Image (cartoon, rainbow, N blue to C red):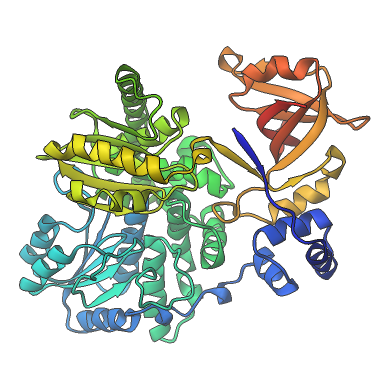
Length: 563
């Protein structure tokens, strides 16, 4: 693990902010690292307000989208809400469809089949629309590169409104409206919205046109917060406001589908991390193991009893998914070892029988062992399909673009993407991808990095600091949970291995004559000998340990080194 200590801000800047908002220099430093340099910015950070959301009509083509939807409703046309089968897509479909259905009946939903249709807009979906006399498709979390599909729909007299957040190609589809803050000619002030977030901006615009404020659509923000967390978009700016209020909805007035999921796992008071590891995998499991429409049905169900039955079914999907991704991960690791590819710059593996629904998870698992850009392929019809994942700091999308001559199609983000190619192109692509990455990746990016916000002493750790840090939430990309470094620590005689095969480490550390503070290090059981008889350094975040009705501070240890 690389330990990277962030540069200290200038002392004068720290002092100014510290005095302006009456916080310690440590807290001021943490805020400055997050781009906050004055009282007003600090106020907006600690107290997000719905009024901070941007006018949706600042987004290119929003006026055209609202007009087309309004005209469709006035003339009683059938509308199809179309979205991808992952969390961002299914939450977006649930959001826009349930909003429109609350005031207009002629609305249907469509989630493509992962296996028969693949990612994004499909010809089958357009044919479904044509067969059902649908004249308007609203595509969410997909469509920005669907030039041929939109042209096909136009031939059938079907209009498209595209709500996407992926990078566009050199040409935009010939749709009635293309809502995507990443399009070069869009001047919307924030371009990191997820697909569901753009769906929310669409319904915000529809409400605004009626003279209503955003307050009437707050109940939909639980869906937006879930998509923000699952899609790993930055929790900054507008996303921070949406996630903040969305978590409030999840924890205080959640929809029946979410309540059913949380009841099954006996969990309440969720953070963004809880959404990522509890809600998101279960929504995803439907599209991975069966069909994404199960997720949309759960998210739009208003009857708690029916929602409970759906959640139980999805829980089974998730259990099956966990077993399957573990099995495929083991096969993929064996393939890398047998092919003697441990020392490559990339991991590219393929087996035609691997389940398409879990290859993205497997790619992430492989990075835990071989920290490098990774693609996992499987057979999909007459093509090969892959999920790709990257390491921090390396732009996977750019690397794939350099290999596009070996690809049928691809799309995605800096850190995650999907692609298809002909089976005859596989070896050519594998060699080309290795060549591109080897020439463009910095060697240090091939080692996992822990980014450290500040070096502190144990004396700096107080209940007051913890109270302030809790107000930094919600955490996520762009506002990660603060990580600290402390040197010259000793074990107070408490250190021991815990858990199955003692693979976790529990200890209580002292610095000089300080009172001991307990800490837990998951998967750090092998570090036990290091902490028993010598001084050591810790990298950690601060956490609260709830036990038997009492709350105490503890260190959540990320790594340990000998002093």
